[in-house]
Amino acid sequence: MDQRHTQKNVAGRNIISYPYQEYGIKGVGRNRIPIMSMDPYIDHSMDDLLHIECCKGLAICNDYKMGMVYGGLPPEEVQNFDGHDCWSEILSNIEKHDPTGVHRQALEEVADMSPGQEQQAMYKYAYYALGAVIPWFFACYLKKNNFVDKTKDTGSWTENVKYFPNVVKYLDTLPFKSIGRVLFFTTYPRAGVATHRDSIVAEHKDHNINLFFSSGSRPSFIWNEKTKEKIYLEHGARSYFFNNRDYHGVDPEPVFRYTLRIDGTFTDELCQQLGLENGYTWKWDYEKSTIDKLVE
Image (cartoon, rainbow, N blue to C red; front, side, top):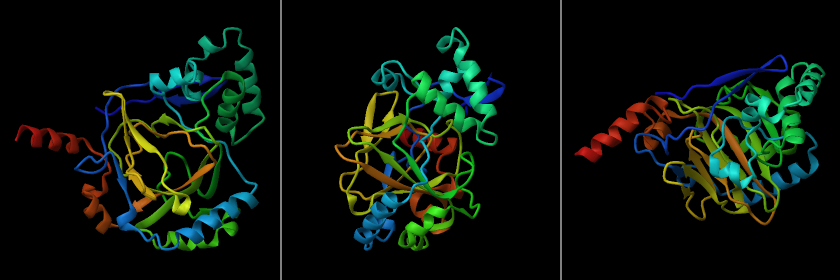
């Protein structure tokens, strides 16, 4: 059964979240691969050029956004952060975290002062005042769309693309029929990416490629919340695809790091190669097929 969202009215705004639940790794495609190197499917011959351009562009660009995830973090991650959880879970349990009501008043005020950006103002306030876990350093968007519909092509490129001309050209070589959101996720030295899901566990067709170019492989992992194991991307891989509804994260590294994330819809040919039936990254039939194979 699909996981369900919860809703809570906080400071006059509807906050959507979902509590921690254990589903285990669902993986990618009918073979349910936890995390898949995309190196065999894309061109890495320009990696040196693209890496330098990424670093130069990030150095010049001043249009950054704070990172955001929502939903309950694994209890092990909450413990790592001394009891602090995701902003949406903190606000969903606001009475516990704000017994006097002072923060609810402040949340209402920052939301009122941010028309069209109410949620962003509220989660940033939760970071600054309520200790909510900040998932990464900053995000830099090249192409925007709604978080829920991040694979859809809105054509909404940002002004930042002028700093990344070769990256934008490179996107046309990737095996997508259409490209939705494009952005950089970045991390501080010695700060990893908090273990999280992008959304509820449900059937979906979210496709993505995550790129490091010649900056080198990253300790990216899928977290199996049932067995308490990390499944890592193969060492040396410069790109990967994963089921964004599985818990995932990145271990801390000693230097600043970036990942270029492209969300969209893969070509039919690539879907066939990856075992994505009718484009589904995950559907419940994949789990049934796995059980049938074990029985055989």
